Length: 381
Image (tube, rainbow, N blue to C red; front, side, top):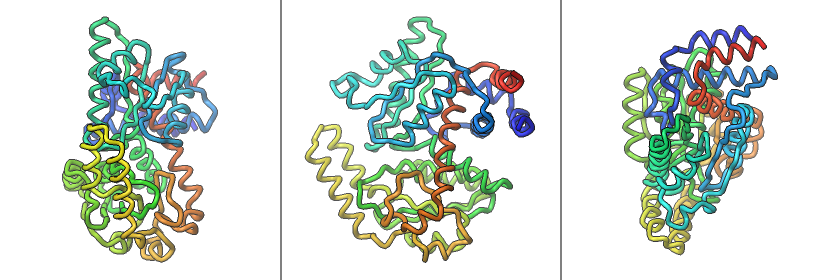
């Protein structure tokens, strides 16, 4: 056990750990290669410590506050589990219960939370153009309060999913892939595909996070979706640039079979049609609930034109014995067949569990000075 942890600790660059102190990761694309390397190594260290029953109370009795403006099961559990393992007190609230619903600005909310919280997680993912901007405004409010009161506390923000990215999910997915392919992702064929869902118009942030992260590691990434389900320009541009820099590749197809052919990994996941997701912005800003309901129904009707976009046994047969991945919950019988889901059920649980350790890495990296030394002390005790 200690040998593996020692290897990860030796791989940590002191300057990279120092750069994480006080840092809020709001997109993976904004993180340097050293930042990502340090976060991933820390997550693997925390996972190994946890598997061996070594407690990690590095932030005792600090308040880990999380605000969710969208439903969640796995991410709420991961936030609570990560905070508790670090000795923090997790508090999770529904975003509709905040004063934001009554007109308080995000910066004002940030100042109020900054008075007491020691870390803040936020999920704000449903409306394009709003979630990530909201997080940045919250951060300004917290930072302004701390500066004005000469408070030296570090209060990092963790993006638990926004309209642009889902960093903790994408990094958890990457860690799962590192376990499957210890030799690295260079040359591995990964299909990130739209899939049919009858339930609701899901955000774009998961596929956007995947294409802008996995292309940094030399993977050959194919994005597949029907016409009208385009992603935002920024993550598309990032995917093209990162793939060029890493020696990988990135392409787009409107044929799910084409994306699956010869793939090593498939990640079929629904998201809402681009134009209608944009229509949500004006309706949300106007507070027009009837329009939001109508847009949602239009999204589902458009989805229903593509019920054949399913990850089933036939499509898995086109792959190179691919690993099936999903952020969960998957729409069984729509996004994925029951047989494929059952075959990969244990893999999906392992994939999901990495999010706990990613959040631990983000929190500890942002809050704990001399973190490598502190971890070594935990092992020796």
